[in-house]
Length: 69
Image (cartoon, rainbow, N blue to C red):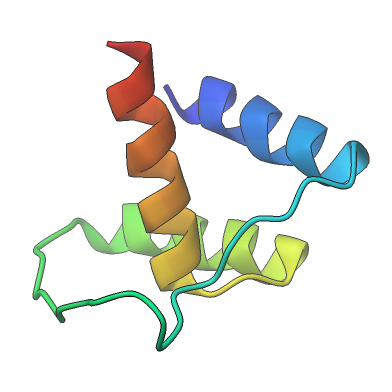
């Protein structure tokens, strides 16, 4: 799943597809999630590499995953 998401984001960026950040035009809620520290650190590194927020990476990843099942 991690490799598939990474590929999805890389291909999207390569093709100039816009990866939408959460914004005021869409209703949103804050959620507290529990995750292993090493996974959160990986998410943060990947997000920083792509210039995206942690929330955007998690949201896009979950949307991609849900579409795949």
